[in-house]
Length: 554
Image (cartoon, rainbow, N blue to C red; front, side):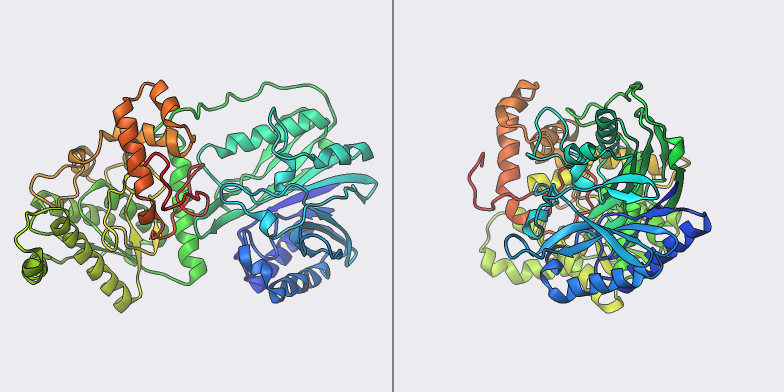
């Protein structure tokens, strides 16, 4: 039996395009004389569809797409993901399902049992858990089919009470097949391999794992579909961050019991600034390309300050969209240094993107003159500083409206965590590119971008970071050293460690208390922020739900 894994990039709710892509995948598998082609979780409608699932029209279109696809599943079998109606009155109206199509018919529908409701997942909001388990007979073999989370319940602390494979193994299957939509984060690929290997070694069966690829707003899916033999070896791994087909002969995956050496797990107890920086770079490229492509946008704009954050965003955007489609606007104020302007100009010359210099001195003075009677002679403070940032935001949004640009935000995770940003100023934008990267990771990404030669000028990387909103300002005037701050923030945000645990790791107690207070007091700012391309295990956005008015550690 020859099986093909079809790793594809879908568009949520674009049934025509998704259906055409799936049919093309079936044709490509037929050309390879495959017996079965496997697609990913909810591929018919795209993942995650969220509240679209509450519309009967959306479900009807999913069913219509499956009807169109099954006409092509004649001399080849097709496994694909799509919502399925629950015929019972009790429970949720839908199942998250794997559909088995063959001979032009729906032969069997497998319901997902384990429904994740954590981080970016919210499946129990929409779906009923599966409660019946049957293998799929096909050409003298028995296929044990599961959907994504169904294989993740192994370990010392199971999240769910059921394990679908414990039921399916009693029916003596020949192979496990998993349809998945598993998001990227910079240490998830290793974890994914280890959970598949754990299933293979427990049930002593080979596994085919088909993952989706592509970005859906903030969530990036990295592909990397896998084939494991029954001894726990990876025998095929599809590319990351791109569409691909991979074929395997079932007979080559012989059943065995030998346990091969397991890869060394990465240490995720501490933030390593350059860990998997190459994959982070690819994830950001895909995130930008799909956000623009799937929304029908072509051109981006951003404020280029001569600092590290805007430099990295500009370089990544030019690679993702093409240099001619990214416009940089330099907006120096009275406190901007000329070397910052020179650095920003040098960067755009290296990249070859269009840029403009719009000095905001006169606008800033006009604002101060207008506000002076109301400020009533009070000393210069954050109000005057933030006015500069908001002027820039207004000018960038004006250009965005006039010319149809999408404004790319340039804030990093360290700033977003601590509230070191101005609402309606430097926090403006339609998409955040580096909002899930701590400052030191941004520096690591800059060095990666320069790996084949200088793109980002060395002076941008070497100089002390500054918002340049007052004379001789440095970030260190307001924040701890980023090398310390970022590791502290990682413990609190990604690892969910409390103050005692963080202090026990060697951080100063006063610094911990101050930092955690900053994080929690600034939730109101993040709640108004644009979508952030997710590259970590805990990004700000849909996967982190913290009360704005809570008083915990604030």
